[in-house]
Image (cartoon, rainbow over all chains, first blue to last red):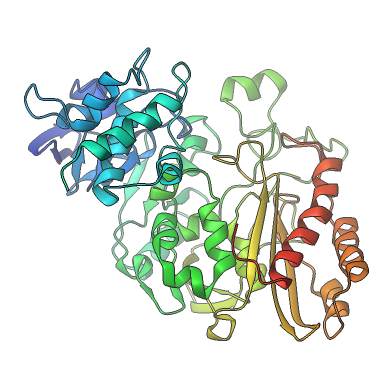
Length: 158
Length: 328
């Protein structure tokens, strides 16, 4: 087996070095090589948004991103959203309002919402709906998810 | 789904990218946003051993005035309020591509060169092997029109029709230097459907040029699809017009999502310019475009429905722009 190139990434604020062939998909690298299994594999084709991570703060489909192309960029996964044991306000709102059922889509929704609220701290309902258009939920439905994102926005200072 | 191994190239200049494409002609793909190519690779569709990523080509991510680098992300275009004022139809088309998550990665050049789509093509290898491969990938017959050795897969980009009606041009770099030509000429309308574009081996789309004289001209894009939050077009209609009192001073109409390439209808629309736009004239225009398009049965909606909706969308979009309506 030929040696694989070493990839230098920055994930959740920490430098990470790991071997990865050029065809390695970021989602596979996170889940299978680094065991960051909070990022979920849903459709694996860019349709469902379960694999959403933040690249330089913007929601990105990790299932359609080559790991090598994420080099030099700040990667945030669901594991990097909370502070210690303190949930992020978006996570807190999802729990408080029951915006999660099986939970499989939740990491993707949370990261999309975190990025939305950073860009628009007081989004309108239409802006929330548009922002989560690429995240699919098959059990809860969207009403509670939208309400949770709006509640997180209201809970934020300012 | 893991990808099959390939060699990844990351050129830093247009000339280097074009040189790599020439060296590996027929055995490479360009990687822009990856939102179309990588799903196809995961389904083992037309794999190539060399992938040339354009993410480090600074010139292609640059946007200045009417020149939009081919690697400009669709999300960047849709966030630009000034761009939406200048070219409302192009912005409206960009906003309707897939989802915000896809548009964060998807690019202008990628949408122009998006692979044509067909119910028998965009399937897993297992699915395609079960039925027998088609001539667009691994096989030798078309399952849609079996009596012909031509691919009828549908052009599924949204930007091209919107760019065509405002007179945009593409800038291409290749072995013989650079050239510019109208967006419509990028597509090989007379070809076999497999070779979809008129680019020579080693040529790369560098940028799109939007003409200054079209700035602020009323333009719009209407898209038919099953899920308004996600799908590729079952039909896309782009219109740009200007009016002089009660008369049409200029009118262009283009379609996508119906045939293997986007289409313009200048021969039809020319007959309506200089005349008042009465309801009867508008109906006649819509009927003429509807009669001209030839969708086949290879997407989710039946071709007869897509054809009839072409007339509806032409009428609606022209009417909206004629009466000064803004983007939907």
